[in-house]
Length: 309
Image 1: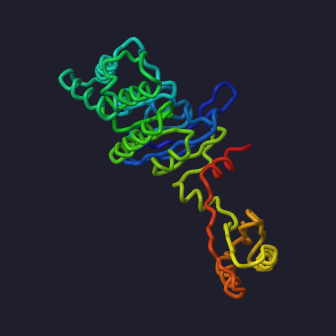
Image 2: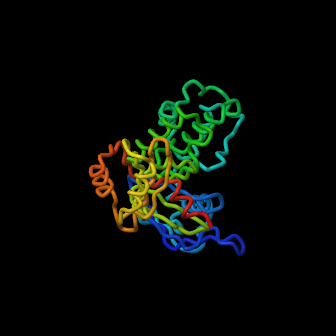
Image 3: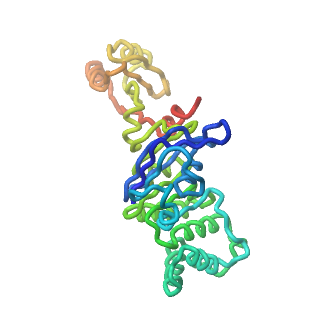
Protein backbone atom coordinates (compact mmCIF):
# COMPACT_ATOMS: atom_id res chain seq x y z
CA UNK A 1 0.00 0.00 0.00
CA UNK A 2 1.30 3.43 -0.95
CA UNK A 3 1.31 6.31 1.52
CA UNK A 4 0.80 9.86 0.28
CA UNK A 5 1.16 12.84 2.59
CA UNK A 6 0.20 16.33 1.43
CA UNK A 7 0.68 19.59 3.33
CA UNK A 8 0.52 17.91 6.74
CA UNK A 9 0.60 20.32 9.67
CA UNK A 10 0.25 19.61 13.40
CA UNK A 11 0.21 22.28 16.09
CA UNK A 12 0.47 22.03 19.86
CA UNK A 13 -0.89 25.38 20.93
CA UNK A 14 1.10 27.97 19.00
CA UNK A 15 3.98 25.58 18.27
CA UNK A 16 4.11 23.73 14.95
CA UNK A 17 5.39 20.19 15.57
CA UNK A 18 4.91 19.38 11.87
CA UNK A 19 5.02 22.24 9.37
CA UNK A 20 3.32 21.68 5.99
CA UNK A 21 5.24 18.54 4.97
CA UNK A 22 4.58 16.41 1.89
CA UNK A 23 6.11 13.09 0.79
CA UNK A 24 5.20 9.69 -0.69
CA UNK A 25 6.20 6.16 0.26
CA UNK A 26 5.67 3.39 -2.28
CA UNK A 27 4.84 -0.27 -1.70
CA UNK A 28 8.04 -2.29 -1.24
CA UNK A 29 9.99 0.77 -0.11
CA UNK A 30 11.79 1.11 3.23
CA UNK A 31 12.09 4.76 4.23
CA UNK A 32 14.31 5.94 7.06
CA UNK A 33 12.88 8.92 8.93
CA UNK A 34 15.67 10.93 10.56
CA UNK A 35 15.77 14.04 12.64
CA UNK A 36 16.95 15.39 16.00
CA UNK A 37 14.80 15.03 19.09
CA UNK A 38 11.68 17.18 18.81
CA UNK A 39 11.94 17.50 15.01
CA UNK A 40 8.47 16.00 14.37
CA UNK A 41 9.27 12.37 13.51
CA UNK A 42 7.14 10.69 16.14
CA UNK A 43 4.25 13.13 15.66
CA UNK A 44 4.19 12.39 11.92
CA UNK A 45 4.25 8.63 12.53
CA UNK A 46 1.43 8.88 15.08
CA UNK A 47 -0.71 10.78 12.58
CA UNK A 48 -0.06 8.19 9.86
CA UNK A 49 -1.21 5.44 12.23
CA UNK A 50 -4.21 7.60 13.25
CA UNK A 51 -3.02 7.65 16.85
CA UNK A 52 -3.27 11.44 16.45
CA UNK A 53 -5.86 13.18 14.29
CA UNK A 54 -4.92 14.59 10.91
CA UNK A 55 -6.09 18.17 11.44
CA UNK A 56 -4.46 20.06 8.57
CA UNK A 57 -3.39 18.49 5.29
CA UNK A 58 -4.23 15.09 3.84
CA UNK A 59 -2.94 11.54 4.20
CA UNK A 60 -4.08 8.87 1.77
CA UNK A 61 -3.17 5.22 2.25
CA UNK A 62 -3.92 2.84 -0.56
CA UNK A 63 -5.77 5.70 -2.24
CA UNK A 64 -8.10 6.23 0.74
CA UNK A 65 -8.14 9.21 3.10
CA UNK A 66 -7.44 8.45 6.75
CA UNK A 67 -9.98 11.13 7.66
CA UNK A 68 -12.88 9.12 6.27
CA UNK A 69 -11.52 5.54 6.31
CA UNK A 70 -9.59 5.44 9.58
CA UNK A 71 -10.94 2.17 10.95
CA UNK A 72 -10.43 0.29 7.70
CA UNK A 73 -6.91 1.65 7.19
CA UNK A 74 -5.82 0.77 10.75
CA UNK A 75 -6.27 -2.91 9.91
CA UNK A 76 -3.48 -2.64 7.35
CA UNK A 77 -0.95 -0.94 9.66
CA UNK A 78 1.46 -2.44 12.17
CA UNK A 79 2.87 0.08 14.65
CA UNK A 80 5.79 -0.16 17.04
CA UNK A 81 5.74 3.05 19.12
CA UNK A 82 8.90 4.49 20.60
CA UNK A 83 7.79 3.75 24.16
CA UNK A 84 6.78 0.15 23.28
CA UNK A 85 3.98 -0.20 25.87
CA UNK A 86 3.55 -3.82 26.97
CA UNK A 87 1.58 -5.73 29.62
CA UNK A 88 4.41 -6.83 31.91
CA UNK A 89 2.31 -9.36 33.84
CA UNK A 90 1.34 -11.34 30.73
CA UNK A 91 3.44 -14.22 29.37
CA UNK A 92 4.78 -13.59 25.86
CA UNK A 93 2.55 -16.22 24.22
CA UNK A 94 -0.60 -14.95 25.96
CA UNK A 95 0.20 -11.36 25.00
CA UNK A 96 0.71 -12.20 21.32
CA UNK A 97 -2.51 -14.23 21.28
CA UNK A 98 -4.28 -11.25 22.84
CA UNK A 99 -2.82 -8.88 20.20
CA UNK A 100 -3.82 -11.26 17.41
CA UNK A 101 -7.40 -11.34 18.70
CA UNK A 102 -7.48 -7.53 18.93
CA UNK A 103 -6.38 -7.38 15.29
CA UNK A 104 -9.34 -9.54 14.28
CA UNK A 105 -7.44 -12.70 13.35
CA UNK A 106 -9.72 -15.75 13.35
CA UNK A 107 -9.24 -18.04 16.36
CA UNK A 108 -8.12 -21.00 14.25
CA UNK A 109 -5.26 -18.96 12.72
CA UNK A 110 -3.98 -17.35 15.93
CA UNK A 111 -1.69 -20.20 17.13
CA UNK A 112 0.02 -20.35 13.74
CA UNK A 113 0.61 -16.61 13.59
CA UNK A 114 1.97 -16.59 17.14
CA UNK A 115 4.38 -19.44 16.34
CA UNK A 116 5.60 -17.60 13.24
CA UNK A 117 6.20 -14.34 15.13
CA UNK A 118 8.01 -16.18 17.92
CA UNK A 119 10.28 -17.70 15.29
CA UNK A 120 11.01 -14.65 13.14
CA UNK A 121 11.54 -12.35 16.15
CA UNK A 122 13.79 -14.83 17.99
CA UNK A 123 11.55 -15.27 21.03
CA UNK A 124 11.51 -19.06 21.29
CA UNK A 125 13.71 -19.28 24.40
CA UNK A 126 11.66 -16.59 26.20
CA UNK A 127 8.13 -17.33 24.97
CA UNK A 128 6.81 -18.74 28.27
CA UNK A 129 8.21 -15.96 30.46
CA UNK A 130 6.26 -12.95 31.63
CA UNK A 131 7.10 -9.84 29.64
CA UNK A 132 8.24 -8.06 32.82
CA UNK A 133 10.95 -10.72 33.26
CA UNK A 134 12.50 -10.07 29.86
CA UNK A 135 15.52 -7.93 29.06
CA UNK A 136 14.94 -4.67 27.21
CA UNK A 137 16.11 -6.27 23.97
CA UNK A 138 13.61 -9.10 24.21
CA UNK A 139 10.81 -6.71 25.14
CA UNK A 140 11.62 -4.82 21.96
CA UNK A 141 11.29 -8.08 20.03
CA UNK A 142 7.87 -8.64 21.59
CA UNK A 143 6.89 -5.16 20.41
CA UNK A 144 7.99 -6.02 16.88
CA UNK A 145 6.06 -9.29 17.02
CA UNK A 146 2.82 -7.52 18.03
CA UNK A 147 3.29 -4.99 15.23
CA UNK A 148 3.56 -7.80 12.66
CA UNK A 149 1.13 -10.36 14.15
CA UNK A 150 -1.67 -9.53 11.70
CA UNK A 151 0.64 -9.47 8.65
CA UNK A 152 -0.01 -5.78 7.89
CA UNK A 153 0.79 -4.20 4.54
CA UNK A 154 2.34 -1.15 6.24
CA UNK A 155 4.84 -1.12 9.11
CA UNK A 156 5.53 2.05 11.10
CA UNK A 157 8.52 1.41 13.36
CA UNK A 158 9.68 4.08 15.81
CA UNK A 159 13.23 3.25 16.96
CA UNK A 160 12.85 -0.52 16.28
CA UNK A 161 16.35 -1.56 17.42
CA UNK A 162 16.47 0.39 20.69
CA UNK A 163 17.99 -1.76 23.41
CA UNK A 164 19.12 -4.58 21.13
CA UNK A 165 22.66 -5.96 21.18
CA UNK A 166 24.75 -5.90 17.95
CA UNK A 167 23.76 -9.46 16.96
CA UNK A 168 20.07 -8.74 17.51
CA UNK A 169 20.35 -5.50 15.53
CA UNK A 170 21.75 -7.40 12.54
CA UNK A 171 18.90 -9.93 12.79
CA UNK A 172 16.20 -7.23 13.00
CA UNK A 173 17.76 -5.33 10.09
CA UNK A 174 17.65 -8.51 8.03
CA UNK A 175 14.04 -9.08 9.04
CA UNK A 176 13.06 -5.52 8.08
CA UNK A 177 14.80 -5.88 4.72
CA UNK A 178 12.87 -9.06 4.02
CA UNK A 179 9.59 -7.47 5.09
CA UNK A 180 10.33 -4.45 2.92
CA UNK A 181 10.23 -6.54 -0.24
CA UNK A 182 6.46 -6.79 0.04
CA UNK A 183 5.42 -4.14 2.58
CA UNK A 184 5.61 -0.38 2.95
CA UNK A 185 7.97 0.42 5.83
CA UNK A 186 8.73 3.69 7.60
CA UNK A 187 11.24 3.53 10.43
CA UNK A 188 12.81 6.20 12.56
CA UNK A 189 16.19 5.83 14.18
CA UNK A 190 19.15 7.81 15.49
CA UNK A 191 21.61 5.17 14.28
CA UNK A 192 22.73 6.49 10.90
CA UNK A 193 24.61 3.33 9.95
CA UNK A 194 21.34 1.47 10.42
CA UNK A 195 19.63 3.71 7.87
CA UNK A 196 22.31 2.98 5.26
CA UNK A 197 22.15 -0.75 5.98
CA UNK A 198 18.37 -1.03 5.95
CA UNK A 199 16.64 1.77 4.04
CA UNK A 200 16.06 2.42 0.35
CA UNK A 201 15.44 6.11 0.92
CA UNK A 202 16.07 8.73 3.61
CA UNK A 203 13.87 11.58 4.81
CA UNK A 204 15.41 14.14 7.16
CA UNK A 205 13.07 16.37 9.16
CA UNK A 206 14.11 19.40 11.19
CA UNK A 207 11.89 21.86 13.08
CA UNK A 208 8.84 20.15 11.60
CA UNK A 209 9.95 20.54 7.96
CA UNK A 210 11.43 18.06 5.48
CA UNK A 211 14.98 19.24 4.71
CA UNK A 212 16.22 16.27 2.65
CA UNK A 213 14.69 13.42 0.65
CA UNK A 214 16.66 10.85 -1.32
CA UNK A 215 18.98 7.85 -1.20
CA UNK A 216 22.16 8.01 0.87
CA UNK A 217 24.16 8.29 -2.35
CA UNK A 218 22.04 11.09 -3.80
CA UNK A 219 22.26 13.04 -0.53
CA UNK A 220 26.05 12.68 -0.60
CA UNK A 221 26.23 13.99 -4.16
CA UNK A 222 24.13 17.03 -3.26
CA UNK A 223 26.24 17.71 -0.16
CA UNK A 224 29.61 17.39 -1.84
CA UNK A 225 31.53 20.62 -2.13
CA UNK A 226 35.15 20.71 -3.18
CA UNK A 227 37.00 17.49 -3.96
CA UNK A 228 39.00 16.34 -0.91
CA UNK A 229 41.85 13.84 -1.32
CA UNK A 230 43.99 11.96 1.19
CA UNK A 231 47.45 11.64 -0.37
CA UNK A 232 50.74 9.97 0.58
CA UNK A 233 53.89 10.60 -1.47
CA UNK A 234 57.24 8.86 -0.83
CA UNK A 235 60.85 9.51 -1.90
CA UNK A 236 60.59 13.28 -1.56
CA UNK A 237 61.20 15.99 1.04
CA UNK A 238 57.97 16.84 2.87
CA UNK A 239 58.33 20.61 2.52
CA UNK A 240 59.30 20.37 -1.16
CA UNK A 241 56.28 18.19 -1.88
CA UNK A 242 54.07 20.59 0.05
CA UNK A 243 55.23 23.63 -1.96
CA UNK A 244 54.91 21.75 -5.26
CA UNK A 245 51.35 20.66 -4.49
CA UNK A 246 50.40 24.18 -3.41
CA UNK A 247 51.57 25.47 -6.80
CA UNK A 248 49.11 23.27 -8.74
CA UNK A 249 46.44 25.54 -10.20
CA UNK A 250 43.50 23.23 -9.43
CA UNK A 251 44.40 22.89 -5.73
CA UNK A 252 42.81 25.25 -3.23
CA UNK A 253 44.55 24.07 -0.03
CA UNK A 254 47.12 21.55 1.21
CA UNK A 255 47.47 20.42 4.83
CA UNK A 256 49.77 17.92 6.52
CA UNK A 257 47.98 15.02 8.21
CA UNK A 258 51.27 13.23 9.07
CA UNK A 259 54.48 15.08 8.17
CA UNK A 260 56.73 12.14 9.08
CA UNK A 261 55.00 9.93 6.50
CA UNK A 262 54.40 12.63 3.87
CA UNK A 263 50.63 12.42 4.25
CA UNK A 264 48.51 15.33 3.05
CA UNK A 265 44.88 16.37 2.84
CA UNK A 266 44.30 18.22 -0.41
CA UNK A 267 41.21 20.25 -1.27
CA UNK A 268 40.61 21.09 -4.90
CA UNK A 269 39.14 24.34 -6.18
CA UNK A 270 35.36 24.45 -6.70
CA UNK A 271 34.39 22.39 -9.74
CA UNK A 272 37.93 21.08 -10.25
CA UNK A 273 39.67 17.72 -9.82
CA UNK A 274 43.37 17.51 -9.00
CA UNK A 275 43.99 13.77 -9.26
CA UNK A 276 45.62 13.83 -12.70
CA UNK A 277 47.79 16.86 -11.88
CA UNK A 278 49.03 15.26 -8.64
CA UNK A 279 49.92 12.07 -10.52
CA UNK A 280 51.79 14.02 -13.22
CA UNK A 281 53.77 16.01 -10.63
CA UNK A 282 54.84 12.78 -8.91
CA UNK A 283 56.00 11.27 -12.21
CA UNK A 284 57.89 14.45 -13.15
CA UNK A 285 59.75 14.55 -9.80
CA UNK A 286 60.33 10.81 -9.45
CA UNK A 287 58.15 10.56 -6.35
CA UNK A 288 56.17 7.43 -5.50
CA UNK A 289 52.44 8.07 -5.06
CA UNK A 290 51.38 5.35 -2.59
CA UNK A 291 47.94 6.68 -1.68
CA UNK A 292 45.32 8.95 -3.24
CA UNK A 293 41.90 8.41 -1.69
CA UNK A 294 38.84 10.63 -2.18
CA UNK A 295 37.21 11.49 1.13
CA UNK A 296 33.57 10.39 1.13
CA UNK A 297 30.98 12.69 2.63
CA UNK A 298 29.59 10.90 5.67
CA UNK A 299 25.87 10.67 6.37
CA UNK A 300 26.60 12.01 9.85
CA UNK A 301 28.10 15.16 8.32
CA UNK A 302 25.06 15.65 6.06
CA UNK A 303 22.71 15.16 9.01
CA UNK A 304 24.59 17.70 11.14
CA UNK A 305 24.71 20.24 8.33
CA UNK A 306 20.97 20.01 7.76
CA UNK A 307 19.81 19.94 11.38
CA UNK A 308 22.18 22.26 13.27
CA UNK A 309 20.53 25.65 13.63
